[in-house]
Length: 239
Ligand SMILES: *[C@@H]1O[C@H](CO)[C@@H](O)[C@H](O)[C@H]1NC(C)=O
Image (cartoon, rainbow, N blue to C red):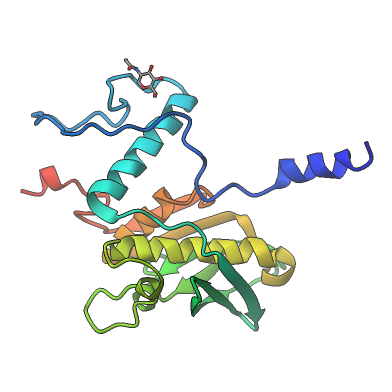
């Protein structure tokens, strides 16, 4: 009994998972018949309307599956080897698979002012172009180092995973590893509240922010800025 109480408390306060398991069996159709209108986002691929939260989590799993299959490639889970450490305002993450490992950093800028934290935070791909409100920390992440937009970059992600996976998914995977580090190190080390983390980015990094938010349930707020087509914009309306 004595043991049970802290366990129950823990389960209430434990962090959300990277990806909640699908509440249904996701089966994508073998083909999509042409339709003159945009698809209804609140309808399962089998035609059932999304009328409650459980069916929405099923629809969300379908949308993720479609994005992975048709556009982005499948997001790898947390690397089997994973270490995070904090020095000054910098988090260093070392992780890897099959004897290969990579290392990258994320930099935390605490808000100025009287508050002492732990602070909510915005993770910004490639720096931020939106004003970060007072009281919110900024975490910057060099996603170009993870997967370069142009050839010749370091491509840390592709040192571990298949080049058949798209770079946007590589960026999202990196954001998830930062969230792992925030979870593992905890607010006592990072002064960041890992349950109140948002993500942003501008232009191609806006697409990256959208993908990061779509593929990590721990992200509380996704702010894609000017992400355009292939991001929040619709290809069908681009012509
Ligand atoms: C559609 O899929 C959902 C989720 O798998 C399922 O609950 C429902 O019964 C299906 N509806 C039809 C008409 O097959």
